[in-house]
Length: 189
Image (cartoon, rainbow, N blue to C red; front, side, top):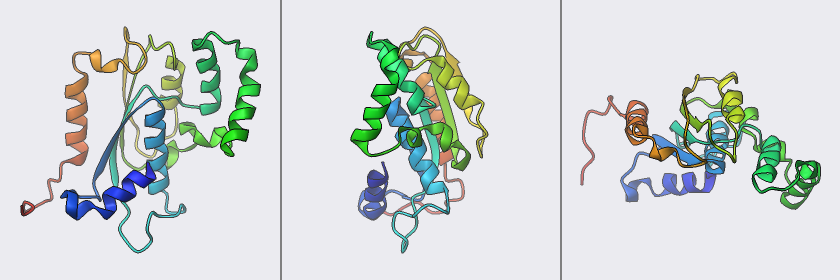
């Protein structure tokens, strides 16, 4: 995610975009990558992408079906696959070992307090991969900017786009957070 943001930053003129105003949308683990990137970029104690240039400014995050705790999601994944959750500690150990990273560090619950942009979290009660308890845990966190929350029913994991209002709500959310009402001149062609 950081590499993609760096690309947008470096190619902003060529792409004719404002790299200081970025909106991200993710589903499931992709949402987690977006949340962690926004936290890292919003935290002055973290290294910036390029100290000599402006850091991309993430203004909004649309979060579809995220997990709250990576370590806890392991049990959800195992149960969904029909594998005994008694193997959870072993799987966590090997995930930490293979990636060389503590799995707990990849958990939105550890990063929400550093996110300084608008966040919209949507999740379905009928998601059998990532349970609604993850939504509830994210909703209860101490966010810098309280997220907008939309709890749905009747949809599976990453199938929330089937909800009739889904696309319009997403469009409205990004318009609210990315609209540059202070812009006085239009970019030249």
